[in-house]
Image (cartoon, rainbow, N blue to C red; front, top):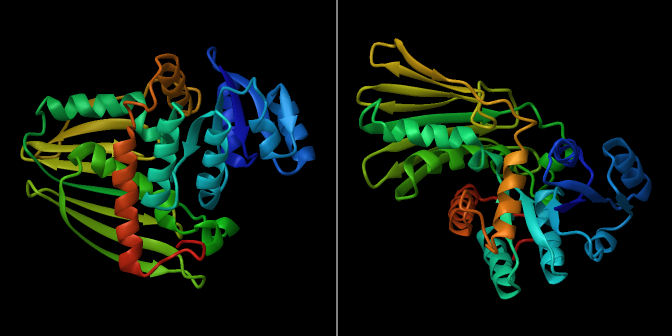
Length: 323
């Protein structure tokens, strides 16, 4: 399948490298507002066509699937551009800046019979299925709580502190902690409490979130763009606990008994970068005539967007361009 990459930043480079190593995807096109940047990108990753505008690439009839790798604030605009020009879409997380934008994109895609999905890679990786199987095995018994954290020292990245680009730690890294909790405990949340520390520009620098579930489980989550954290997720049960090393890109899973002895260990299979799984899932869905991925259905994206809207509302964070 011919892939067009919209945006030529660091995550686009990761995707282009990934596609260059895949058998069922082709680095067909790259679009940047800077044509020289596109040309350089195309040469480095052997992309067939380079474009100096997003609109030009979108109108290329040979582009089948567009991967959107622009800042959060532009996802809605660019995904809408793709859909209105008949292109299937794989859009980076956070999918949009709020639930309303996500709902509108899904409605447009449905009307036009086009595929669209959120590229939150943790939902597509094989280790997600491994974790599901472990939880179903009852090896740690009845589940009670989990903790998850994700943090990087990235507060020096201009877009992450800019409200006009939907900056802040929640949409960039906190989205992974929320998805981790959702994948483990589901979405029957009865209450949320949280605290936040903001940057001088008014976006969230770091936060602590506690989710309370209908079945008396709780998830304690932390995300930050001020420091590098250990990135671990730990699930606690009546017979022991599970440790997931790096909830952002699982590096392994360990199971411990109540007394802390290692019971079992699962290694992450060899992969290109981890991005290949969302591309493969998208290609499979499109070829099957499906409008969403079973790994990350539209309903799940909307739930996470709704959670982040509620958190930002509680924190008094509203982006300048939001209605």
